[in-house]
Length: 89
Image 1 (spheres, rainbow, N blue to C red):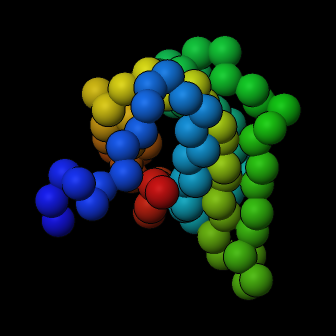
Image 2 (image 1 turned 30 degrees about the horizontal axis):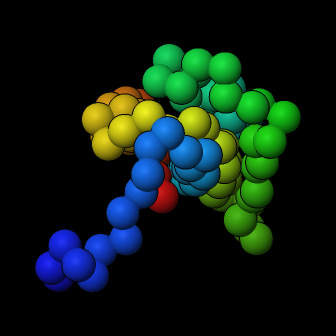
C-alpha cells in the first residue's frame, strides 16, 4: 500500500490498546503495571475488562496518550514478552 492510502496518526493522541490473554485473577494488574511503565499516568478509570463467553480468555482495554511509534512498539513488545499475552490490538 502506498503512503497515500495509509491513515496517519498524529501524535500525541489518545490511543486505545486491547490486550488479550488467558483469564487469570492478576491479568489486569500485570497489564496495568506494564502500561504504566510506558504511558505513566494513563486513566485507569477508563480501563475495561471483558471475558470470553467460556471464561477462558480476557481482554483488557486501556487508553493511553501515545507519544509516537517507538513508544507503542516498546509497549507491545513488553506486553508480549510476558508470555501471558496472546494479542495486542
